[in-house]
Length: 142
Image (cartoon, rainbow, N blue to C red; front, side):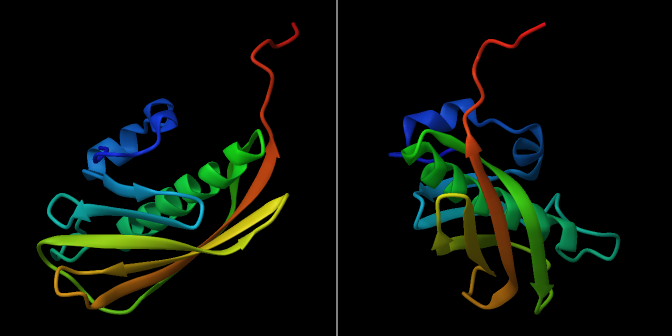
């Protein structure tokens, strides 16, 4: 799932869905996070990249970027709003998403995610807003 030279804390951030989708993270920071998935295995019934796959890629990349920001302040990030617009169909190869910070605040983070095919053509554009919360304590009261 993870490329080289990524933050150590990503080892804690495993997701069965990301593994099933074949996600490869290429770069992770609060300002910019990049990852890709294969089209094969992530298609709908007529062989096109599933719109839900674009949604998952948007949510994952935006969330990882928001986590990077929240961790800098001792917090965690949780998704609040997800929007995806689909621009063109893709049948093969990979799609690559790049999450770019639009707002990095104390309580809200918003990232724009552009998804392109292997030729660099835009497939979808998404936006994820996350809520930044204090990190929960490791001990829970009964």
